[in-house]
Length: 255
Length: 261
Image 1 (cartoon, each protein chain N blue to C red):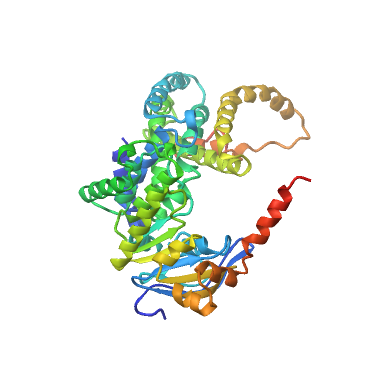
Image 2: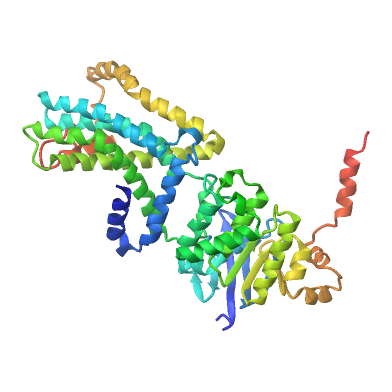
């Protein structure tokens, strides 16, 4: 999948000064670095682990299809499936993003090589997109198709849902990079591995924390003098709105 | 206007890291085929100057032209033409020397056959051929330095910048690098060599630039500088020009501090 993706991206980005050969070279390099756990030691996902994870994600992907049989509106279905798949992806992407974007040696290794900024940035995003696509195919692919069972869904729902899920995946990866970038400033590189472990643990436990917080939120909602909380600032709301575009109102209306 | 035979031309170059001014109006030209030593105490601005000349850093103001290319605008094109050995031996730890050199060669558009031949020749010369498939993370500092020097020469550049290239090298490899630089110089390549090792600079370089506190304080051949300063060694000239203290009083101070009370 990756060589075809690189070729497609090279064609699209060539007018912007992206060097096709270098793009392929760099994507291959980032793949090798991720596979060999260049930055995060034992936490990195090698090709085999990635394939296994991708296959494993088929199970929640298939289970989410059952939601399409219920009576919930399309907007809600989209939000829930996107939320679950993003959460699952976050655990993997936290490490993958840190491996591909945050190698402290990279500045000195590549800075004097003849690589245009556009080529370098495109290579990073292409690599990340390849990982996201591989994972999204199994976790978001089945719910995208099952969404067609909803009466409001139009023929292109699988495309909008899958596209928004991929964008959410890229967004998650970039946010993970930003967070790691901040951690780099306060922590030595040697402690990055444990930081990544903590982040993974936090993400894994976050649904639980969300459930714990739910009664509190409900209780707060009954207090009349508290202002209504507008959730449209949450990134998941933006991507979910994109998933149902031209078909149904989103579960969280955007303002 | 830069002189027509100048490989490098710098005019009124200023640079600062945040609020700290590092270079204050450096001006010099280096002719094609010249081997120029860049000397200066720690923090004088040598590495910064080299990083600007190689297109890694952008000058705050001033004019920089290398091999007829204006910086920073043409920095990608420039990086195709130059070789650079950085001061820090940072490498991808999980790649092997073979893989790293292949990466560098391909980024410079070398064809596979030429690349393979050059990698083999360089790794053999630097005595790394048997360890070429080992991860760079397992290399010693000297071995890493050899890989960096190989990477800088792989595409046969016309201008080579070396920032403390002998750091960590064993005697044999240091001799090899010095001879290599001398041979490259006879081939008419332009070499800019930043170092603290005076005898190497004195032996290899046809010209010396001494930078102190971001300003050019001397420019000339090693012999001319010695004659001008009425000194017998480049080190003495350097001490005179940079207000570097003689080591003896400091040694005495250290020994005094260590003496039993």
